[in-house]
Image: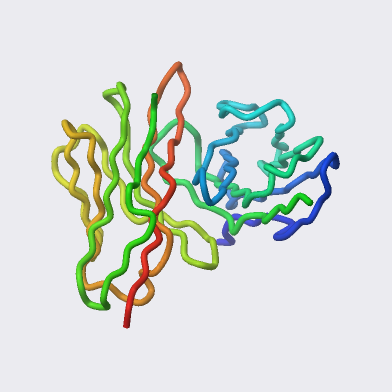
Length: 114
Length: 116
């Protein structure tokens, strides 16, 4: 069974631009979560989707948004990029949200904002 | 505030020796789960071990075990017979149910170096 895939793996953008990151969960997994990882802050939860609905949201500004498609694939969008948005963005999938089920992480997308 | 603290940014251990990574957390919830995740240099994060807060018995997975002290809100990870492949960032996390939704709270990580 293929793991969680994220595209692109690396991205360089300039301030003010917007970016869209993609995540394909493990086959059969319907819950997708997004995290921002930075050296100083560790992992911070962005949001969680299940059945095309946002079920949970972290404390990030409205510039960060996401969506989930009927095939469970998810996209994350960041508008009006700031230098502080430079980070590794991780996607994780699980069979369903709100349980003890473990999350399976993707390799991440490294976003650099210049 | 719901926080997870990993006070050791970096640790080193000699191959075949034992190392303990510390983690403390703060929550007023009574129902939660605790996890240790490992992130090797290739960045694919994987679950190492998990513990249900209502269970008193410490979880064990092969060479990995935890020391769960609920009253002290402490959840340390012990790695026995350390191997070169154990070198990675280790994240402590807990998952709670608050305000009708579940949340994962992660610590800032401990980088473990294994010396040959």
